[in-house]
Length: 268
Figure (cartoon, helix red, strand yellow):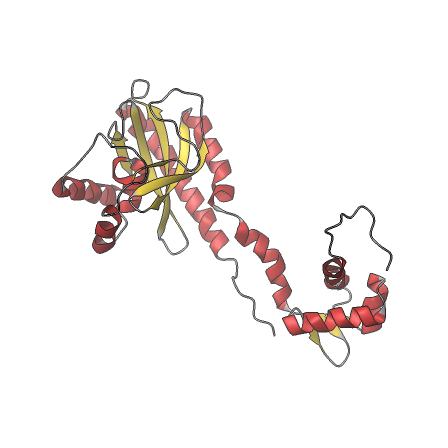
């Protein structure tokens, strides 16, 4: 087979030939002889044979009496792309829609110890007290994003989580005792959403909902964040919250569907 045009010095020809062999199997020819595969790929028979036998060893090809055929394990190669999609890929269009309908910034964060870490964000150009970007940390208990995730933890795990020192470098305005903390998290657990009203820092008001995977486990939080002087609590609850809850449900449903993609294909 002649050298491929427009390939760089790091191009691995053997890998490319292996993929050529896999692509040679088409719907109208699911079983092919060694000669047919060699002809379809323009490869020498010895090269084709080595590639096919390698694919047999790896479980991607089956060798039968009439020739070679692909196995279901080949689906792993395509499924790997789907499974590699992160929460951001699933959530982005929903977040953009929510941002447009509220004219407020929308963020997703996940717990890391006693902090939350922002993992996705669609922002509007507004001045707020604290700058937020991907990777920003805040103490979880003083944020709506943190509350919806802390409220989902079993008691022992909650205590262990909050016992870890914050790495955010920030001291929250709200410093509750254990009774006040537990009462707040019970309320969040009961209603299914959380609000913070300048508990983290002056001027920051937000409302958040949990994001769940296909098992119903809370895996992150999503919020709408605003400046307290511009958006009232009533506006947050009456207008932004219903939209947020709908979007949280949509993202969770999409994330659950993503989770139904098989993680292992058994060769037959």
